[in-house]
Length: 173
Image 1: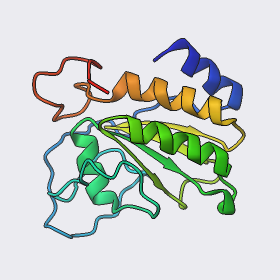
Image 2 (image 1 turned 60 degrees about the vertical axis):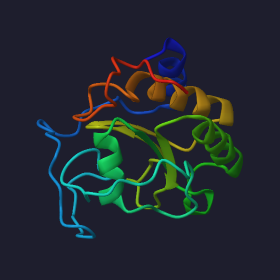
Image 3 (image 1 turned 120 degrees about the horizontal axis):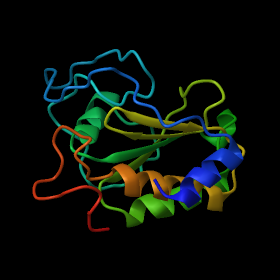
Image 4 (image 1 turned 180 degrees about the vertical axis):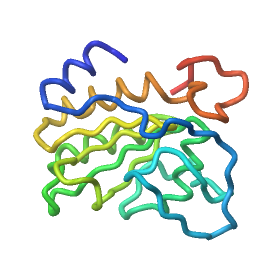
């Protein structure tokens, strides 16, 4: 993780980057369309729909099916979840800055997640990896934090099924 991202995260009082479950094996598929209740929110691993979300669009205006999003995480995506401003979340300017970032990145999906835990306005997720932040951040701080997380975890072998032929965070933008 970049020093700039960690510094920005400390400045706005993001929590620690953590790995929510002790064991997060991949390949646990549900039946197509089957629902699942995850122990953590947002989910970063676990049983998931056999169909991931498509790589485009990168930005969704409405919440996405969590069982499909978890499948994307299994394939080394990063998800940017946010609480909308109307629900006490990120400012519209901050959301716009993050949307621009997500549109420019491969293997990154952004969507609102109104049910984020109390006090969390931004949640960055990779396979079994989560970083949660409050709403008190500028658009610049948010993009620095998100860029650092993306660069550290997207396309890496922390996910059970990373892109073939890809080692570490060496992925094309």
